[in-house]
Length: 264
Image: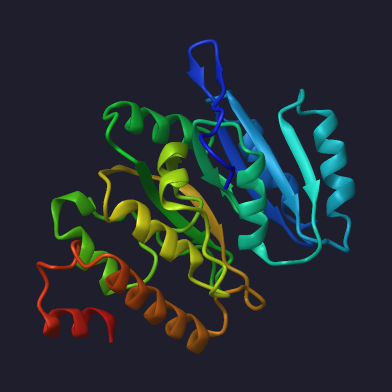
């Protein structure tokens, strides 16, 4: 994260949205991902692409897209350090009052950012807006579109501790001031860092559901960071324990037996 208060840009009367996109050897998909950002109905957007040491044609493809972007793409490169380090790097360069994350192999519906931003404008106390999503590329084709529940209508903390991340990383738009308050991605874990961040943001701030499928998540058959399930399960457990340890007030309404059921 940047030092001190962020300098957030407003163009006309429209706040700037910064989209952070890590990229590692995504030549087959990155053009579709980038175009889904540039073609949003909400146009006051900057796209920050952090190349995480790609060795394929990704840089060349991005270079061509930069020429067509009217200065809306910021490109930087780092030695391979993983997607979460790349996202933190992108956050340091972001000027927007709102932040979204999009991986280089996923994409959004054309009105995704417009609808998420509208939801945040409805309540100035709301820290984050989230939406439904659909996985594509699974064995047998696309999965059924999924719209998550309105977590504000239930015990939000218990629900978030029950399972892993409540939405994919690109199915949310968050206020920059809140991100600066809670900090960026914790790099102590090789996976689940988005779950850790959403716990820190959503458990202690109001959030708002946009009950539409606006985000599309490409499911690869192998090689994704979540493909090693035992490691994913262990890191989820560690993130839950960390949250309880650091936020005793938020879990004080849950008994010890309830916490054991939710975490262990």
